Length: 352
Image (cartoon, rainbow, N blue to C red; front, side, top):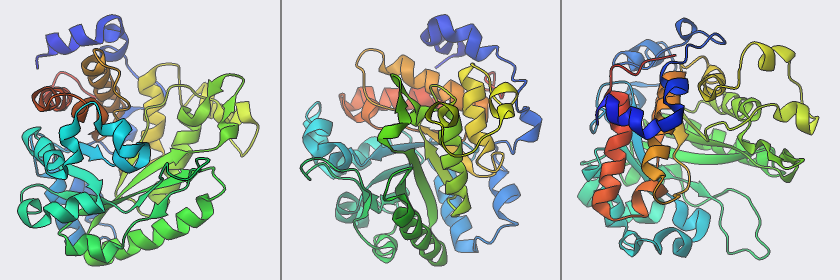
């Protein structure tokens, strides 16, 4: 995809996103994604050589191989959102082999999905694309619905099926978050012992984060702090929703913050809001991947490209996009994944 096509897809936002020069947190202060980022960040860390090899397996695969950027296909929605809600638009993805095929044909760096799905496919595909096993989930069969991430399998079993990495979610702000932090921290320590990389879904979750009609679950300050907690338990990659607003701490009137977070370190530009998320990932030493979000139909391609441009220009490491790709015919899903990757391959789109 050409820069001209990307510009067309951005529409009225093109100038605001492609020409923006950030004056909040400068790009020079960031640890920037690139071919040498793994050596520069993790060669001085406590990660053992097996973890470095797993990280390189992910970074060195697919269309974005060895660029410093990643494109990951995540399909855990069959548990998180129910299989019917997730796969009814395209029932072929009830079969986990098609999930893996989409990731491979789509040029992804890795495929992230459930224990059951990857276990069934391990002998056929574990050596063909890096596996990222999601080890905990929320489920929607409890009535009334509750929201709690619980473990679905062991780190050792993820290693047995050939995974390069494990992924987990923590609902920061929830009543269960302290237990989840301990569980995931212990799981990540074991994963590193076995040589696997770790990826953390850092989600805010509390009904109190919705205030006066505004949803602060996607506020830059709250998601930024969630990221900072995530890197503290040694996640190697952070997954976060793209910020849509700011001022969650002040609106909800809890926790602690500082006026400079809003006056100097962020602005209303979505790139600056995302850069604050990157800053909370140890100034980009730990890569930030933003989620692609739900499928909206015809606008999916433009929405995916927009998210990729914001993430890349903010200093992020890539995108992890699922529903926009698998809730449509496979050839269209491949084209959408390739469009995301093209943003990261377009040299004219640099850090703001």
